[in-house]
Amino acid sequence: MVKLAGMKSSEVPRYLVPFHPKRIPHHFVDVLILGGGIAGLRAAMEIDPRLSVLIITKDVMQESSSAYAQGGIAGVLDPKDCFQNHIDDTLAAGVNLCNRDVVEMVVREAPDHIRQLMAWGTQFDRDQGELMLGREGGHSRHRIVHALGDATGREVMRAMIHRARNELEAQIWQNTFTIDLLTDAGSCRGALVWNVDHGKTFVWAKQTILCTGGCGQIFRETTNPPIATGDGHALAYRAGAALADMEFIQFHPTVLYIAGSSRSLITEAMRGEGAHLIDNHGERFMPTYDQQGELAPRDIVSRAIVTQMEKTQHPNVYLDLSHLDGSWVRQRFPGIARTCAEFGIDIATDPIPVRPGAHYMIGGVVVDDRGQTSLPRLWAAGEVTSSGLHGANRLASNSLLEGLVYGAHAGHDASVAALEESDNFQALRLENPTSKPPVERLDLTDVRNSLKSLNWRAVGVRRTCESLTEASQTIHQWFRYALTRQLTDPTGWELQNMLTVSMLMIESALKREESRGVHLRTDFPETNDPVWKRRLEIARDP
Image (tube, rainbow, N blue to C red):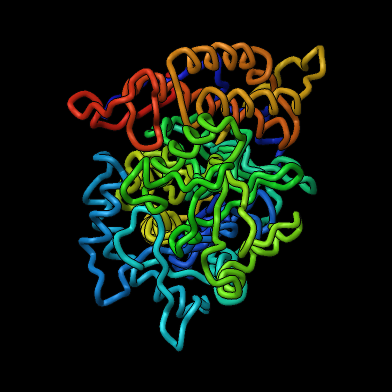
């Protein structure tokens, strides 16, 4: 592990907003869970019923990246498959940067977690009573369970939300923004949160679990929902937790590219079922880039698409399913069929315009195999973490799986730790003074749009020292007037978090002078194991 110094403390304030303990309400809880996706809810399932637990979500419970997951969950459920195959596929996709012990742990726990979801009411797709197992890029076997054809996340989250509300009777605060983690004497003591009804609130907790998801919104093109602005990455960094692998963000090869549409994900399962990638001349091109064709790992497919777009001088490529049975295609992918039909595209007969988009953040808060971070009393699970499972490139359908495994581990161990701690309903004397109000109004939308475009150009599928350095200089200029001032609502706090995460990504990408997995440096096109077969850790400069 190589440690980077991170940004200067003068550039990144410890807390984004002013507060004083005599002027803000206080709430006390045993375990605080930040995030209501699959990792956060799985953690909640493990909390001892003798403890109080509070789940805080930025939006409503149904609005999370987990709910938008189309493909499915990978696990060895076919007697013809074996753990070693799934382990080998994960290691191969990760390009020599995975933690083998973590990979083996997650893969071996996968079947039990999938069965647990079914016991909790998740209805995975079946054929004549047997689970339908799909195959996606990088997998050597059919091992992906899916639901509702192409809406696995929605069905999984439906079942988990139902259990959290009706069986666990969990306390849930929706539409509540987490501004910062509260720390004292080098330990996490809860969080400062905000909502429109109550304003700022101190939430004091014996143990806190961070499950806030990814940061795809820092890019112009992304499959992520609007809430994915890297809040958890940024607030963990401000609190002093170590982060790693911040140069690695996965770009999904096939994102719907139609003027006027949202950048909807076109699931990899389509290629798993036989869809071809063709260019604007109708030529199938993937076999010329990789012998696995459309089923190559995502980093390879994304690079190939970008190269083919340049060769043809066309803004996108196309997914073609016209050689498959039309009625079966529409039945297998009903959600995508509906979305495309709104724009006059029949997925069974018409080519679907696609191009890569930011999809999954591999880097994040460093955790051990139990979900413990470097900051005492803080745990983390899911996309906000860097667990070592994915290495330099995530294998398809391992993300929901990671959320389940690490959510369960973090929830269990945080629960045990909270049980060992006695109650203390006393607030700490933490204070952040008010700074002078800005003289001139800041156009947050303009800065946000400029940042997203800059990142897409400089830290996208292809990167160079020149583009990264230019982006770093530009963002440092924005820091001076956008990051150090105290803003008053989630729109401003999101922008400050996006700026912070962008800089962490750029600094890490500049440091890694090689190409590996999703990190493509065209000025260092080769993978250099002797020098760079190691992870980059970054922490706040004290």
